Length: 352
Image (spheres, rainbow, N blue to C red):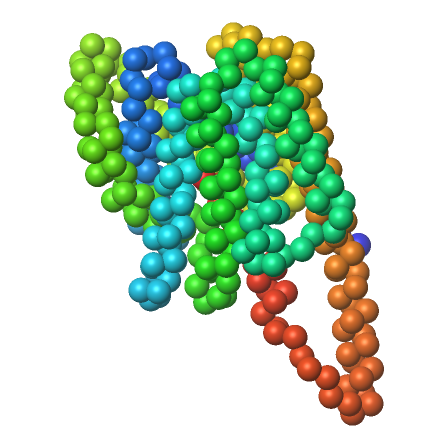
């Protein structure tokens, strides 16, 4: 029987979860504030600031030994990181663009559809099949967004499209990461991967900002000159972007991937409620109902994945026992790849 967690471990876990919620919701609200309330409509430049902060803080923490950096071993591994960084970069940019057009609450409702895109992409790209209950849970996930969209007073086609595309790309990055980083020798811890992807993203975003938002640097300088507080908000927002990923890593370390998923679903609801309280955007009964349907579908999806994983784990010992019996009889059977279990449990997850 495993020993009961000590009060100190419970406290550390609770603090990590609280910091994750605060940093995640904080960066969402600040993104919305900077892009819609200050006259600074430059989402690519804002994303560039986020990536520069991630590189700076991540590099400093690795130098100080706070988060040790795992080195890239080959050009092939580096090219895989470049591919992931490109998808990650576009995901963050589109998410920030959407915040300039739609409320945070509606943004979170659309973002809850990530499991739908993950299941579809995993099947089309990897041939990964789920149990029927998992696919059934995708119906309320998408149905809820349709209902919420019909009841959203601030609905905007550009914002909706960008947010939906960002959600699909977030799922694509997860699937690509499981495919490209399948070699155990090439696996990177989340903070090392964040540092590398952020550095590559800066090289993508800098020319994008110059080409798509040529006046962004001048506008930022003018806003800082007119109000120094804008600089403080911008720096604080950029630093929070790094701490979102750091606290996400800590919560995963102290709990589990499934607990993180459940907490993430609840966080979306909290973020939506806080944004409504802060920005006072109008919320309708239909919008709330649609979001509730989506969240219910997401929890059903998580539960079905948990049951499928538990069933697979229960079958594994029985299979091992049968293999032992066969070996004892001197018979030979083809062996599965020994790395399959490691790959299933050793994935590196990163939230952009």
